[in-house]
Length: 361
Image (cartoon, rainbow, N blue to C red; front, side):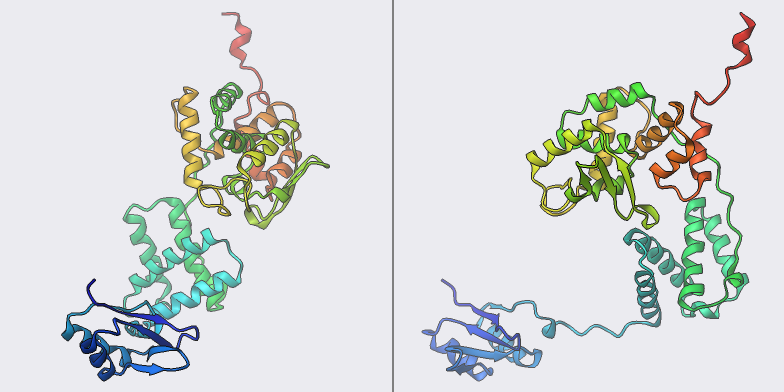
C-alpha cells in the first residue's frame, strides 16, 4: 500500500494527530524536520492546527511524493476578504427582517429584491440616492417587463430599508404603486373535486388534498401540520401560525379524522403529519403541487390546477350552500371581510337567474 500522511483534529480542535507509516524512516525523519512532534500524553505524533504549522508538512509530503490528507478546519481556510459596505448593509437589512419575525419566505424575497437595488446603487450608498433617482430605478425595472406583483415587492423591500432599518419618515418614500387587477378566484366544480379525490389512491396524497378542500387550508398550512394539531375529542384541527401569524381552529369532519389516523399508522411521521423521504422534515411543497397536477390529469381536468384552487373551491361551495360570509371569513382566516367577498363574484347560487330564461324561447 502506498504511504500516506493523514491529519485528524484533536478533541479540543487546537491540534492534529498525525498518522503515517512509522516504519518508513525517510517519511518519519522528513515529518519530524517539518515540525511534527511526538507527544506522550497523546500517545502519538501531533502538530498544531494552524496554517503556519501545516504548510511545512505539506511541502515535505510534496517532496516525498506522499499524499497528505488534511480535514476541513476553519482555522486553515483561506482568509476571506473583508465584507464590502453593501454586504455589511445587506446583513444588517436581513437582521432587521429577522428581528421583525417576518416569515422565511418574506426574508428570502425581500433580501433578493434589496440585493438587486444595492447592485443598482453601484459604489453609492442607498441613503445618497434622491427620491427622483429611486423612482427612476423603479421605472427602469417596470420598463424591463417586471410584473405588477414584483413591482410591489420591490417597493415594499426598499421601503422596509428606509423606514424600518434607517428609521426615516414613512411619507418620504411614498412611491406610485400599480393598481392590482381584480381577478376572480379560479374554482373547481364539486364534480371535478370529487373526481380529483377519487382518482388519488395514495393515502398520504389523498389526505393532503382532502385537507386542502375539506378545511380550506393553504399549501403551507397543510405541510406544517403536526399530530398535536389534531384534537379528536373536540373534533377540531388547529392551524398554528397561518398567514399573518394568525391561529384558527377548524371543525374536523369525521371522514378526515379516519384518514388522518390511518395515514399516521401507516407512515409513522416523526415531527410533521406529512413528511417526505427524510424523517422529521415536512413534505416538499413542489412535490405536493405535482401531486395536484397528476390528480387533475387523472380526473380529466384539462386546465392548470393548483392546491390553492381547492381552498378557493371550499369557500365558494360553502357560499353556494348558504353559509354566512362572516363564518367563511373566520374559517379562512381573513382579516378583512373584503377579502372574503371576492367569492361572491364566482358563487353561482347567490346570483339571480337571467331574464333570458323567462322568455320561453
